[in-house]
Image (cartoon, rainbow, N blue to C red; front, top):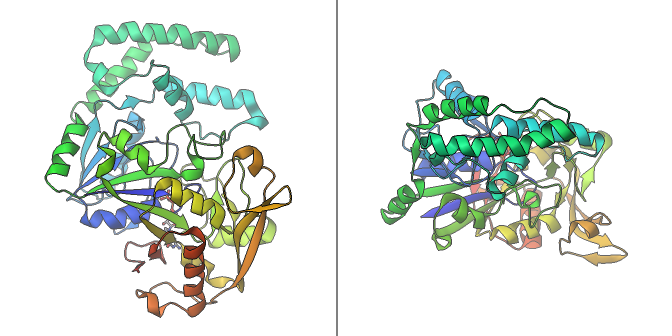
Length: 424
Ligand code: GDP
């Protein structure tokens, strides 16, 4: 059976923890989109890890990790992460990399940096991992697939063409040194050597696994609000963050995805610029940021302080709907234990009208949050394992969110650890 674990919000909902937890019973974990621009934080017996490219679940000896064709494959980062985990005592994981995956090249990262520099204050807040230039090239059909590494002659011709194009921009617009095709070929040769043991037709591997009744997890990055079509465009990422894209990015039939776990955090956070209706500021935000997540709400990749806000039921209902949630995992609920009163954004006011539908970015810019205030539970709920044992006001908060978003909250996460979970 195939299960997707995806974000219903802006990312950083705690997908890594949920995937890691579900991975205990999984045979295969697949990354299907995104690149090294976002990270998952996982806490387990080996320590605390911020993974950017490796799927969560690489910590289990029994799973195979697949880097699907939809991923922006950053080869040096992948190998750095492998080295880091094995040095900390994690057994070398079984990894397969799709021969249809494309590689993030050094010039993608360079161009990403140059563009952020040029835009200065008006930038998209890119993590400068080369993701936007990478996906632009992929769809402009000048990207490089892993499979192409075996045909040196054809590759050389392609690389010369890429350099011709990129150098106009690099020298003309950004005033930088031109790319040297021989250097790019050397870079590709290194990648070829590194990838050779892992490259495979992963779609065939997954087809066989599905036929054999294996448990497969698709692990999404970021969340609905960062989807290029359905998110807060243009402050989005460059590949689809939706479970539906899991079929494309893994190379499996869409009807095989039977379960879709949409992960939503008990309060909101976002990184980078973009519309964020229930955002809070000042001391109120600082306190939530300090107490949030596991050791504060700071970016796993960048260390940037995250923007904070109250739970947004409008965005989350939309987020779950676009994901096609069969299950909702409500995470980081323990963090809210310090609050006397907890506001929840239940509607938006746009031009004097109240709506519960999440609008396009143009309208979203004008949206003001409408809050309902719920009573806090003023206690530490970590360690609780049964729903009935949660304080009444805490259960009321969960039931309220469930009602507002309209999808079943079947898992509640009350701590960063693998076992900090309440099934409902
Ligand atoms: P992801 O990208 O969606 O996996 O999100 P992050 O890596 O930002 O994870 C959120 C952070 O919260 C990580 O530091 C997790 O260890 C932590 N975390 C996950 N679930 C919980 C939870 O239920 N309670 C607390 N306190 N922390 C959690």
